[in-house]
Image 1 (cartoon, rainbow, N blue to C red):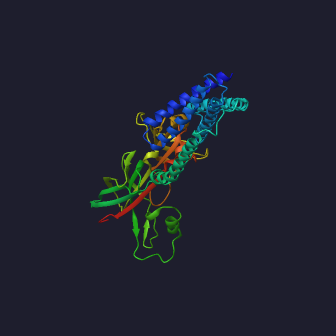
Image 2: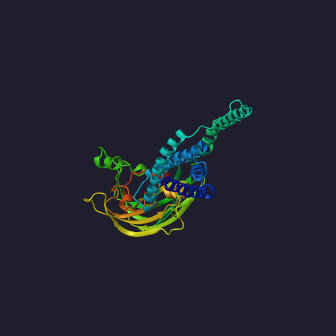
Image 3: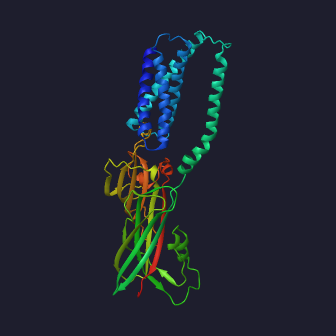
Length: 424
């Protein structure tokens, strides 16, 4: 029985060491390499300890200590892996397999640990001549090693904080700038030229998950004298929603519902911007009508580039114009265009302990969840969601609250620009 359990631990240590070694030598991220080194060292302890059980004189106390060390290492590593799996556990086959194998290894190590501890108590102690001349040398070497470890431990925290912790907490920061550069009115036909600029003004690289610009026109009625009384409807339109500078209270003018002229993406999805880099899109639009005010809006969803690694080896799944059910049965569905991209695992241990995740970006073009406002049409609007694989489209409409977006530092930025129509 003991031999079978020891073989289980030996195989477990060899497999764990193989995966940890791959991360140590081939992973690009330093944190993944450090995790691979830590798990690799633990796997080495497990393998060496299990190997000692197959040698002669297994009742000797030094060999028993090796066995106990392998038992303890297996339990500690197993609990660490269980915590990693538990942090985002979903019923996916690979995670279930990893959890079952790790649980079996923990139980086997616990059973062997009890037996090895009892054997250690029965074993004869190792004779150590404390009066030998080598005593001072051994003690001095031990004190020197401890001093070196203490000195290294004092220098390590500032180095780790400067090189790893501080950069890892930098949030993605982008600035969106809108510019309506030219508006001409020729016999009632409007020609508009506009530009949108996205600039990374932060300290870390960002990834543009998805983006949207929209050009709208509004008819305006202007009176000769200002309103003498406060107009309740105008106040509600300007203040009851979070509309930013597009909303206003004007005592001279009445604004009609906006008319959509043109919309589209600002840049390609998954665009990568390093610190200080920018991307600029210049667009033209045409329209007719009695429009007096033009509005250019832009919305961008971004995340830290190193937290959203798309698996380029897998083709994105695009589902144009599908009816996505509403979160509540009583609500109507929303018609969306959806794109799903598989996220890349950071390493082999990440592949064993983290769920398969994907980036879902949507464009909502009609339905029940549009923002009804007097300042711009309710559709289209965009959203980006990080989620575990297997979820339906409604998880992109409402957050899962599972922490994936917060971990990737997903954020939003936007801007509004307006210009009057000449000669209207």
